[in-house]
Image (cartoon, rainbow, N blue to C red; front, side, top):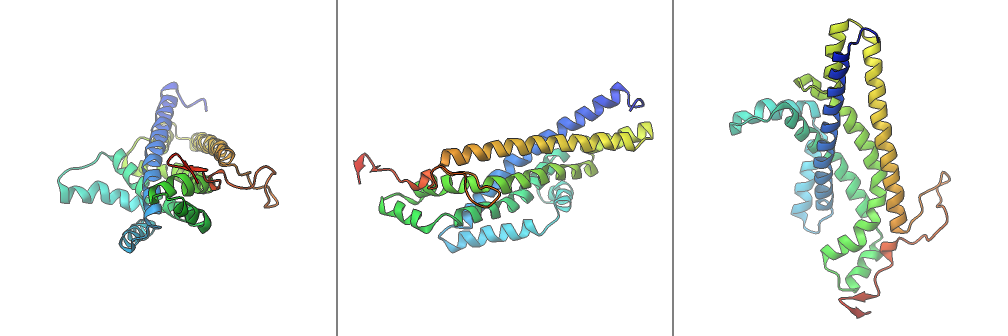
Length: 248
């Protein structure tokens, strides 16, 4: 550790900040893609489901690293403009993990009981109102835990960008290793840094899950598979007594 000078520590900290930025930007893009594609895969029109399914299969079956190279090196040949490596990485990671996340959204939405949707139809809700007021409030808590796993995988996947010369923490570690000639202390620091980031994200997602379940009126599952007391009916299932200002 003593061989790592303040300047080299600053290089690692800069790389850590780049990794955080990559994770945040890719997560925002991936979440938007996952929600749009997941809902499209449950759409009543077959053409929408087909197109969403094609996207899902294509991006699930391709390598994020190769897609990153394709966006950076091949895409400019057809369009005449080139993304900087960092944004090429964000686009690749966001589209890839967004495809994985769309399956989470589709499964959670499909798990909402059909009777809930039928109740919304009986109340005269439009499809958009049923989605916003009935389906998503019940599906959202079930998405958070799988999303947490995807988020951690996305964080670790950001290390791929070092191959393209993006100065993330993995790239910075390689430079520090070359400067000091020591591998063990440098990569030990990087392992700890990734663990701290992943642990922080996990705690945040668990807090979000508890809040979502509390707001939805459902208790979190216990280790035995049951629920911890409280009202077992999702709040979204308790449909409003009035629609458009008139009592049912």
